[in-house]
Image 1 (cartoon, rainbow, N blue to C red):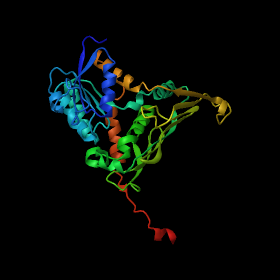
Image 2 (image 1 turned 135 degrees about the vertical axis):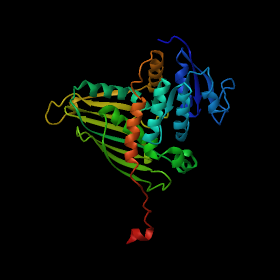
Image 3 (image 1 turned 45 degrees about the vertical axis):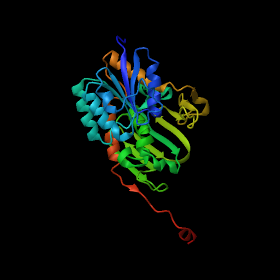
Image 4 (image 1 turned 135 degrees about the horizontal axis):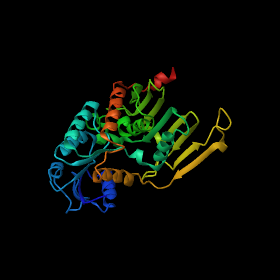
Length: 345
C-alpha cells in the first residue's frame, strides 16, 4: 500500500543514477523531483540542484538515492539518514566495517529505511537459486565457486576507480563484492578467509586480481572466488554444490550484454549415484533483466508498509564489510614482469 507520493532525490547521475531514475518513474507513487551531478548537461533543468547537500536538506524530499563514486557513499548516507531521509545507496556501502557500524547507529536513531544496491540478489536466476537452497530439497550447501571477470584498458587509470582513496579497493571492491555478497546470501556467514591480491599486470594503486577462499568453521561450507580485471572477455559464473544436486549459473543479463546469456543449470537428482547424468539436468534461461525494478519495488514497499528491508539491509552490509576487512588485510602482490633476458635463461 502506498498512501502518499514519495518525493525522490538522486545524487549522482551517471549510469546508475539514470537506471534508478527509470525504475523509480515506473512507480505511480514515487516521483524524482531533484537530481544533482557535477556534470549537469543530461539533467532536466526543472530537476537540477546545485549540490548534494541541497537535496539532502530539502524538507520536501522523502527518499534519496546515492549513486556516487564510492568514497562519497558513507558520508552522504550518514548525513541523509541523520536528516530523516529514507536512503538507497549503491555498493560498496562503506570502506570498512567500522564505518558500517557508524551508519547502523545513525539508522537506528533515524527510524528510516536504508537499503544497499546489491543488485545481483534481485536477478531472477539468483531468486530461483535462493528458493531452492532454502527449500532444503537438495540438502545443505557443501561448497560454492564464483568467477567474475572483466577487461579494462589504459583509460581505466584516468578514472576514480583506479585510486584506492576514492574506490576503497580494486576489482574485488568493484565487482567481486557482488559475488562475496551472493555467497553470504546463499550460505550465511563465513568466519575464516585466505586471499591473494595482486596487480601483476596493471601495476596500479589497486588490485587487478583477487583469489579468495572462505570457510565457515562450524558448518564446513567452503567458497572460492576469483575476481579479475584481466579476464579479457567478460565472464560471470556461480556454482553451488549441495548434498543431493547442484546449481550452475553462467552469464548475467545486463544492459551491455557483455556477460552473455543468463542460464541456470540444475541437477534434478542424483539418480545414478554418486554422480548426476546429463539427463538429470534442467535448464532455465532468463531473457529479461527485471532486477532494477524488483529492487526498487522492494525498497518502496518497505517504506510504504513500514516493514524491514529483507535483503540488502544494513545488517547484510555489515556482514559483508566485516568479511572484506579480513580479505583486504592481505597485501597486494606486485611482482615485476621478467625481462626478455630472464626469459631466455
